[in-house]
Image (cartoon, rainbow, N blue to C red):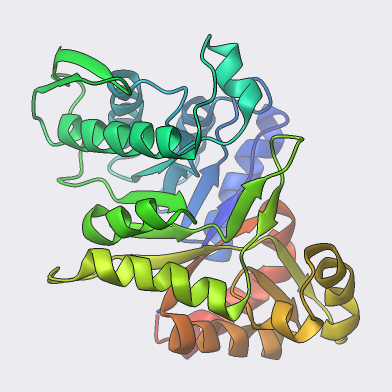
Length: 309
């Protein structure tokens, strides 16, 4: 079974609510919002508004920035969203890569190891709070004292948790603890603080999945694998459409079309690619951008039919 999440952020109220309704009607499994304070709308405010005009679709941040979000407030936001949506919240978390967001809250962005430690500490704390546990942490990366989420309590027994990353240590941890591993395919952050080098070649993906598998050893059920899709183009000339992105990323067109981080081709080719990514990589979930809503709507029905959904 393959499912799709639509990632978007509001520019105004009416169009956002319309987008939420359309995404649900089209068959998207979830609606998500990025978490970039100062550059995008507050994810949980936006998602709560979307909850009021939808009935089925899952709702979550993709992904919240562990560097600038405190676990107590994040757990409260996720639980509140779960309450208001009738049990449809998703919890997504990442290490935070944009230096300006750290500076805006009075922190210097740590090195990679520091961001990883902070993210995993926040993940463990939020999960414990959502599970009803009391949390005390005293470390250089996180300090909490006798924190407990008394109210609101989530509707769901366990809110699905996604860790989004391409970092080896985080992938290993996600293999052991996450419900969903969000494969970002992103490497070093570029100077603008938002864009990245990519890790999309076959060897890169295999290395990332090896880390997940090592972490998941001994689990009764391994985590679900999800790819963050950067480009969706429905076209009858996949090679021509893929060429600019291939040049930008340093991949060949063939290498690009083989990754789960783009979906480019005819409807038939995209349906086949989704099936191929499941067979080759075990990826069964895909996060796509707002501009993929209309092109992918007919494809979703075909993917659902092909997977017996």
